[in-house]
Amino acid sequence: MLVDIYKVKRASNPNELVYLFVQAGRKPSELPSEITDPLGELIFEKCLDIQSGQKRIALDTDQAIQDLELDGYYIARVTFEHEVTPV
Image 1 (cartoon, rainbow, N blue to C red):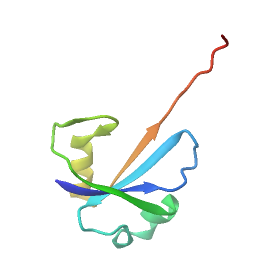
Image 2 (image 1 turned 60 degrees about the horizontal axis):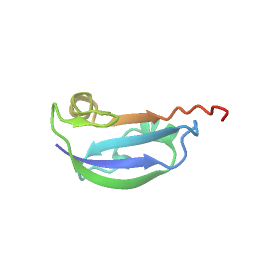
Image 3 (image 1 turned 30 degrees about the horizontal axis):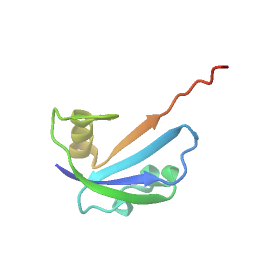
Image 4 (image 1 turned 120 degrees about the vertical axis):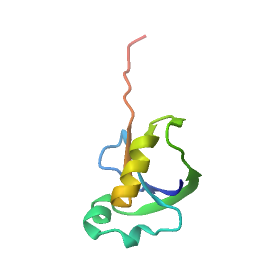
């Protein structure tokens, strides 16, 4: 499935990246405002071909495809955790 990926310009958590996936060629503005308004400004990242069962870092491709087919969009959240230890 070809998807367009948009990055949320400013996530509410500085340790989090948020991405909106829509089927290729579909604009985020075609989604209901209750989906896109909380995300804020979206920046197009890339077009990607995802396949069921495909292994991708920080992406459940099966869930993404299911949500895209049922809801027309998928939101991926990637959280970074880090720990600082004294030397």
